[in-house]
Every structure is written in structure tokens, then in C-alpha cells.
Amino acid sequence: MRPCQAQWLVLGDRQFRFRGSKVEAVLMPEGHKTHYLARQHADLLIGKAIAVSSPQGRFADDAKRVDGKTLVDVHAAGKHLFYDFESEETVHIHLGRYGTFRFGTLPPPPPRGQVRMRMVFDEGTIDLNGPSRCRVIGPEEVRTIIRGLGPDPLAGGKRQDVWATIRESGKPIATLLLDQSIIAGVGNIFRAEALFEAKVHPAVPGNQLDPRQFTRIWKALLRMMKVGLKHGRIISVTRSEVDRPLSKLNDRQRFRVYACDHCGVCGSAIATTSIASRKIYFCPHCQSQG
Ligand SMILES: [Zn+2]
Image (tube, helix red, strand yellow):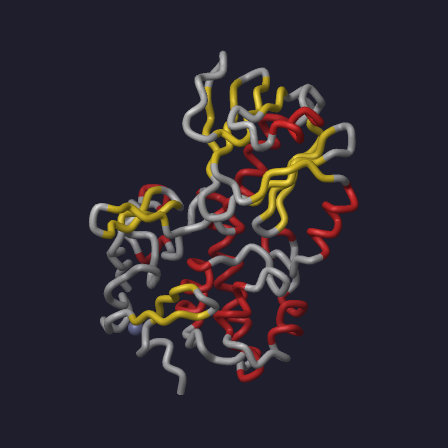
């Protein structure tokens, strides 16, 4: 099969669509990205005293609570990031649709844009712009957030636990996959790409799925999320489908169905529909409902 040529400009896992003179961001980071960032930031920051501030000011009061304290852990659950400090206080971040981190050198550079949180450590600066959540919380609240999430495939979540919920629901599988209380870390790209790989139509209700279909969806998700964690971006094609290493794929070659014009398997035009208020791409031939 051929990888598709995506219709839109894609920059990392941020994607932008041109609408007249406007440039519109259309992606939000999915679970592979939070785990990727947690590993990267754990390597850089654990065991160090971190100067935490908020150049923009919106996080200033919370920043003071952890400023200068030693970071003891960084961990991810679904799309949430947690930075645990020695004082049992935790910075909780959800990147939402627009949140991005930027690395800088020392001394810290002038803030670019609205820097909600700045972390300065012995080797550099990490700035966070545009998160949907950035606040300091205590251990009980961390537990509450994690308890509210479904199994996370990248954190040892179990297929049968997710299946137990999905098999009981009459909602479309594409809705269920985006529900973070059912399965944590899956976003709009992973759901489209996994359903395509599993040859399942996005509108099939959970309670009409065959267990073998769900197993195919789960395996596709797990594989893609692991590849995403390794490369720091979503890549749904496999090495055997492309003529170069996955790390060398440009951003127009890494998806099979998401933002694609034509199916690389059967050549049909890729269709779109809105499920759970988000656009989903699918192949009406390979993912037929009947
Ligand atoms: Zn097809």
C-alpha cells in the first residue's frame, strides 16, 4: 500500500489549515506526546532545583509555590502531565489544542509570546505556551484525575478492561475511543488511523463490534502509540510500506487515512464525517459498515 499524501501542511504534531488568509491550528497532542515529553523532561529535570516562574503572569501565584524546589518525578497519564516536587506539590498540565513547550539556553532568553510557565534548570530553560491547564495541585487531586481516566495503552492499560466498557455501549466506536474515561491518550488521529487499520467503520456501535474487531483496533492503537512515543510524532505507516526509515518520513507521508485524499489500499476517495464533534477520516470501501 502507498502512504497517502496529506492535504494539509503538517508541522510535527501541529497541523495548520489555510482558510483564506487565516491559518488555523487543527491538531491537539495525543497520548504518545505526553509520555514522550514526560520521559524527555524526566531525564533533564529530576533531582534538580527548578526555578519556576510565569512571565505571562497567569500562573504566577502557583509558580511561587514550587519555585526553587527539587523535582522528584515527571509522569504522564493519558493526555495529562504531572511534575511532582519534593514538597508533595504537583504542577498539572494539559496541553489542550495549543499547548507547546520550547527549549532555550542559559541565560533564559526573552519570553516569546505568552509564556505561561518557565522552568529554568542547570542546563537550560523550558517554556510552556498555550496550555489548556497549568496549575499546582496536591497528591489527592492527582489521584482523582488519574482515577477518572480509562486504561492508558502506554501505561500498561489492559485491552480487556477497555473492551468490557466498549462492548456494553451503543455509542459509535469512534465516540468511545475519544472518551478519556474509557481509554486514555487516544485523540482524533489515533482513532482514525486505528479504525482504518482494523477495517472498522467509525459509526459501528460498541455493542455491535465483534471481539476480534476490537482486538484489531487495540493492537493497531498500541503499535501506533509505541511508534509515536519512540519518534515523538504519530506515524501510522509501517517500515515495509515506505521506501525510507520512519524517522525520515516527511509530514505528508506518515498517515494512511488522516487528512488523506485517497485510500492507499483500494484507491477510493477518503470520506469524512463528524463523530463526537470531531471530523473523522475513513475509507468507505475498506471500512464498510455492512
Ligand atoms: Zn480503501
